[in-house]
Image 1 (tube, rainbow, N blue to C red):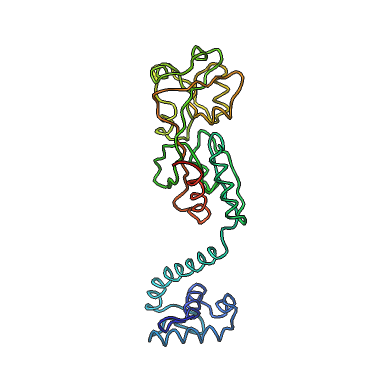
Image 2 (image 1 turned 135 degrees about the vertical axis):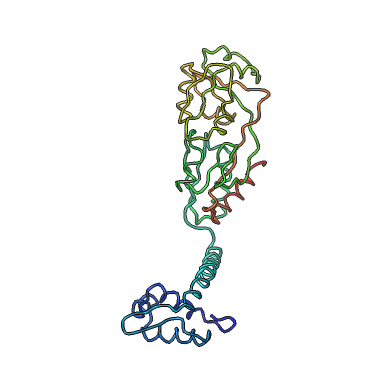
Length: 294
């Protein structure tokens, strides 16, 4: 392949030789003879009109021009190689494995998105991983999942917020012995007098406050998982805000879920790391956006 008089093989040869500073090892990496390395380098130097490499019986070194040429060439070559690899991936379609994290419950919208993604990209497997209530962003940052569907808000500079799903009505989980257990609904004022169980660290403070607003009541415990929280609710150690689908999924005989009026809906959004965006992630974002109102 050539363009405007440049041969890609000559450039590849120069880059490998600059790494190895040895004609024999460069030839081994390029799967050509040592003399072929010399020929490719000489052809490139003729095109440029100056020496790029100094070669003696004891050492190989880049000239000053060779050092400058290397610094300018390498980023461009890597971008070109990346473009070729991205085109190959697009031609092959979406393959590999997509790991999706979720908080609370994998509700019908998430499952519809997974089903649509699998139908559209059968060569890509999906793994679904539950994320701790107390660590909504850690698995994405650690690379344990490629993307996650988590409770908003998300105010993290290193994370991208993708599709946002329509909000769900909030409920408050209370023990069957709690004074609110027989109520048809509660108000924000009722909630303000109730100790609310919150997420423990490392969930950031703004996120914890959104899901357990400050109340005038004594502080309730902080928990790592929803099951820990519901166990404390059943023991009448506090109440816990949960969206309606999560409440329905985690229903138990010793806990009552009472709708709350006058508080913002619970909203889920897809997040991924800025450095971890792949075609798999983008395609799943499309499927999730189409799975329900946004």
